[in-house]
Amino acid sequence: MYDQRDRASSCSLPDFLYLEVLKRKIRRAEEPDNPQLLKEYFSLEQKLETPTRLDGLLRLLHQCKLLLDTIEDKTLPPHWRELCLNQVYKPIARLDRFGNHALFHQQSIDIKTRLREIPDIY
Image (cartoon, rainbow, N blue to C red; front, top):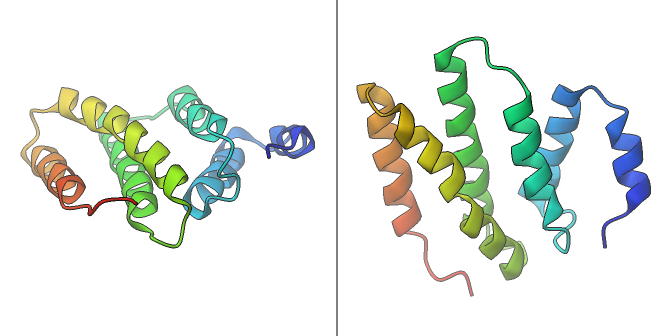
């Protein structure tokens, strides 16, 4: 279960480092019974500034990759993978709003194709 001491100690880290901690916890399902991790991750990702539009697009692609890699990892608990599956639409939708750059449009299509090809989680 979620340990408040862990959050308190991590909170003293600079945001960019705490973001890396959250990514690791999500990817490895270190706290599979803590869906707040994903909410916290997305919140912190939005809080951190991206100097350019390109940086923002790359950040969204990385979010998609993190969640898709987690969803596809059959060694992780199915309920955690399902939770990630239920959240992957967030960066995909934001990526689609950028829409007019051909490279990122193709990346969005590739992500959606990869998502459709994921076999049943259970």
